[in-house]
Image (cartoon, rainbow, N blue to C red; front, side):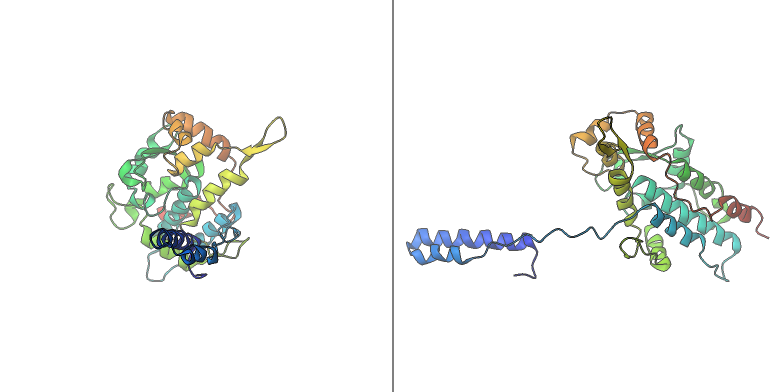
Length: 282
């Protein structure tokens, strides 16, 4: 029985005891009831340390790995530089917003991003058909994300043809690139995957971005309801529903108050140099 999960063992235990009690009632044989006491109640396994533990430096290492990707001799310099910008922008969008890589980010089009950057403040609108929970919501965009999304949109003509309604960040290709860079998390030694960036956002909101109350207690700087609203997580909770009634600018102000000082770009990276390469490929 040990090779089965606690949930499966619990069902087996409950159903078997119920069946033995049924046998006792229809046969009157006390042996059936005595067998119930022989069964050992399954024990819930002790909680293990979360194997996914990411901090700012981990995401910075991922960004740096994409920045340092060696150039394929068969790929033009322009395409190589543009690909780097897209990879980094993709990482930043996922880390700063906690959106699901496959269910949401992989469905965003150039037109979606253009509209997001045209808003003041910058906001991404996620309709229900682009969310796993079918939960339409606003996603505030951090200034760092905006900075890197701009060249992705403005310079897309330098890459193979990308109409405005085409997907910007395909999930499968990004997942493969994470396997290629093979960056390990500092605190756990575990390989960082694309999906871990959603967990990073949650952990930053829960454990890193905190404020001290007058009584000395430390609490998250971003309300759990706002965290879940942005992530489209626990969407049926009252906390999340309360944010569904707020104006986008109110959501942005609360988000940026907590995240404004978070910079996931390593000092070695220079976006201006990358864009200069695209403008002057020679």
